[in-house]
Structures are given as structure tokens and as C-alpha cells.
Length: 138
Image 1 (cartoon, rainbow, N blue to C red):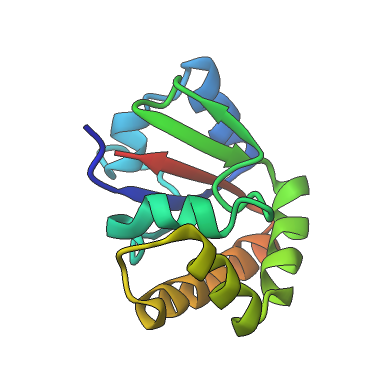
Image 2 (cartoon, rainbow, N blue to C red; image 1 turned 120 degrees about the vertical axis):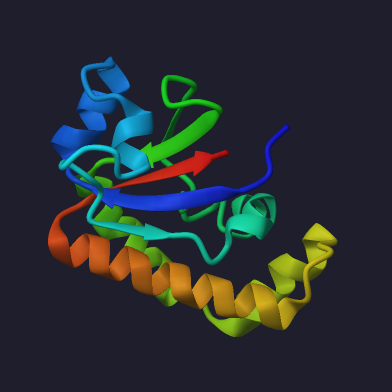
């Protein structure tokens, strides 16, 4: 059973190496080796499912999906991260509120709004660094 989900900013090469199995995702994601992600955004860990619903149109939880980085992961290489960041930045509060109301979520809207704003900032940093993004359900 999944309990949370985190977002990681990493290089395209690191992402590809995890997908093809040449980089151990456990060692990499849990800082057990020198090579590590640039950043982890975990503020929305407890509302990961709600984020997938709210931000599906923007592919915020991944353009592609895989089970190669268990349990389940969505990812976007750097070329897509820039466009995802732009699309997320264009979302306004009214649009998010409308999506929130349609999705019948348990988490309060103000909490979700704060988490989405944090995720937007994370994506903007990843895009400015030329990073890929991995969303991993744990």
C-alpha cells in the first residue's frame, strides 16, 4: 500500500540510469552513495494522490510512468520539465479551486494550494537547472 509520494530533481543521465537499472534507485534516492538527486520536494507526500488529480493536465506527476523505480513512478526528462514548469506557473487559484471542487478531496483547499505553490517553485528550479523530475510513489 502506498503511503506517500516525493518529487526529485535529477539529471537526465541519472534518470535514464535508474530506468535501465545501472543506478540503484534505493542507494541514489536515500543518499547512500555520493551521487544523489539535486533536490527532493516532499511537502506534498501525504497528498500525492490529490496532486495527481489536480495537476494531471500539466503532467506534473510525470509524462511517462514506470514500475522500474518501485512502487510506481512518473517522470519527465529535462526537455519536458521546462514546459511543465511553464504550464504549472500559469495555473491560477480559481482554476485550482475548480479542479479541487470537482475532485472531492479530503485535504483542505488552502493546504493543497500551498503545496501546489511549493511544487510550482520546485519545477521552476528544476527547469532553470536543466533537470529531469521523478515523482515516486512510496
